[in-house]
Length: 246
Image 1 (cartoon, rainbow, N blue to C red):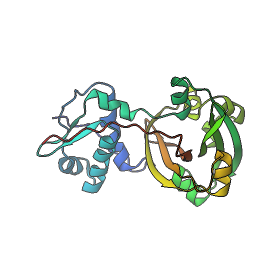
Image 2 (image 1 turned 180 degrees about the horizontal axis):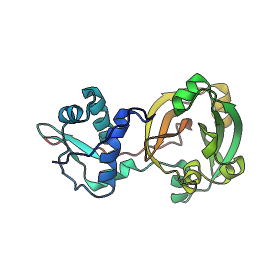
Image 3 (image 1 turned 90 degrees about the horizontal axis):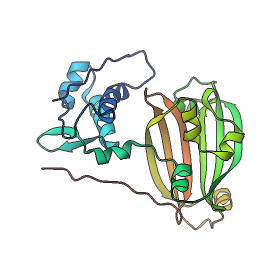
């Protein structure tokens, strides 16, 4: 059984559940743990590191959601097959389009410097009044609009408007030494408003998919928050699901 070495810093802005999941994630992705390795159960983990059981459960569920752990009834949580680890790799629309032989282009619709409101400060984990960049981009595939990408990020790491017209956000962040290690996202279906429909060249009756995403670096710090709107007829989502073993 793998018992992770976890040291909590309760003065840190990093959530406790993320301080717990991160060392386990690094051990799995780094190859320290073999597939099938049993992980300490959340009850013992919570007691050992001094957190509530819901906090420990959330940490373990994060690893399950990232494709790094599998829950086995009667056994507990075990390291997933390495094929599942690809689920932890962060998707990039720009990179995926290029890999598919498409020619993506980007129009920067909005690029503003602003002071974080209470709502944005909470989303980004920064102080109210901190300077942030508000970014809205229109992503096109072979000249056809396919997504509106709306992001907020700290001004200290924000790429320039000119850079973003040529390359993807995560690619530019990586060049700054910032690697997006994980995200928490919610996908919803809805109808676009008139402005969104105009930008995407569709009718307001045509459904779109929205993805609300918070991205974290390897230390668990929030890198950016985004709300992306995709044309339903041009968006494809692929995932791998592993069946639980009795």
